[in-house]
Image (tube, rainbow, N blue to C red; front, side, top):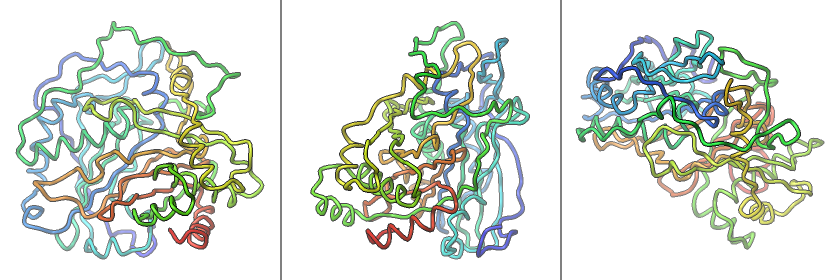
Length: 424
């Protein structure tokens, strides 16, 4: 139950599916080692639109119509997971479709956004994961929720095995462009032929296990690793003025992402008193930032300090993140066996993980020219060490920070950020 909201505030759920306009044919998308390394994670996004003539004119029928040609270009998103004879997963592009959810909310949009509960957005997006009936599980869910006032929320759940955050946002932005009447783009999602060999990757073993990954117990056909503690989310914005003040105060040339990461790393090291926090994972956008293909091309690194991060200066930590990161992308790829696709691992939350999403077009999903008034973005399947997303801010050109951490650590971290730095 969401605090401040009755449990039935979102109701009347209706479920349907949308498939590609044309039959895809007998096509298979082979999953890369990086795809499979990310398979236990899920990207979540919720876009809030205020009531307007444009929104009033969008029925579920008009919202679905552009999805048919859209899925012609992204047909692997409407496929289903299968396994080869050796057990390695792949996507059968069988046009089973993406799942559509229609819902209503008894609150107005303003009332919803005023509620001081940072998990309320979860009611506006599907919580489904891949499995336990893996062969029948959609990789993409889209939920349309109509508020009492006439406003609307669009929530998506995206299986990370399909592609990284850049792929997900570009994919949904393309649907919005089609809704706005733009001509369908060329096909971006041509999968590799089945007989095309993958590029060799650096092999890993227990003795050279990447710092940025963690082995988990085999999950079978239910692709979600359990947590050992209750996880919660919290988000806040840091204005551009505040970030510039921090840079000036610390006399550093480190960027916004590095400053925010160093700040939270330092504070969490103090919150987790008695537990060393000398190594963190850094995830950044890869080559796919300029592409519309569905790929997992993020760069995965780790940063380590020999000193206690709670006692290291903020500028020193920020420059460490900026200049001393160790790229482990190939090692992470090497964890996954080429024949079987095993073992099961997590990346986000294996260590405290900082994810740079500043370049993602967070407000790029426009409905016939109308931009969302607010956007939520998160990740499910984060391990116990937690993750921090750094995204584009709203009107003030600052940064939106999303914390996904053990529930009991968030109040202490908020108090420290407020008392020491005047944020959160």
